[in-house]
Length: 271
Image 1 (tube, rainbow, N blue to C red):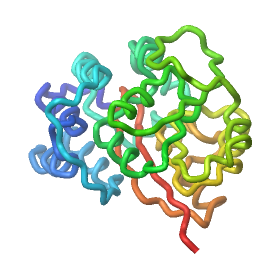
Image 2 (cartoon, helix red, strand yellow):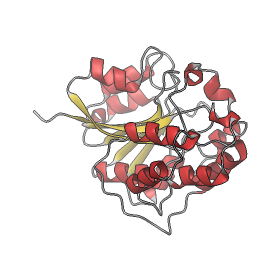
Image 3 (spheres, rainbow, N blue to C red):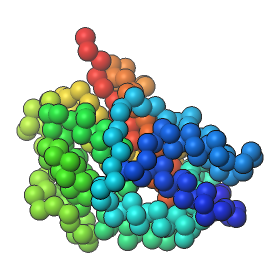
């Protein structure tokens, strides 16, 4: 893993800057690759990130966007000498996703499992003109950030975890499938699924109960099966089980050491 290598702090800064609100993600990815020394860890990470990037969304840059989770994540990358994700075999073991970053429990309970980037928030906002359902919303950090962008968001969570900082006060406390069943299947709204950890058939039941046309998933994209399904990745599931849907967008998200996070946007094909 790259955490065992000596990586220049400037390369780590270049990686974390890809996700800054003040940079153009596509240009930052190109720069991250073009300025990497041939054969270096930075070059390897850059090549991987570019092969996974699919997006036609136009994202305006911002110098005033405030996101404390991003700032702390960027600092943690320097502290752990983490330069970015790789298609590394060691990532495939589920326990690796839990143990490779010492501050994960603190970050998870205070902010959530994944840093909501400026790019990701804008893509969701642009997709969710009819509103967004933040399913299994946890402490509501994503909902809070989206609402600051004037996006209509309903946070839904069973609130099974009591030990966490709450960013909103109006979470709908109920089972996600029950909520969709009682609210027209979420028709007309984006279904946002951030880090729904593999457990039983919850993800399958959610997608079956959803009657809208846009699904946004944020979670691991490597083979540890830590989010989504125990037997396949989200991409594999949509390809096998939801042929009427098209992958519209896939972008890298800020990752922690030993992890590989991404955001996906699927849209139902118009008949």
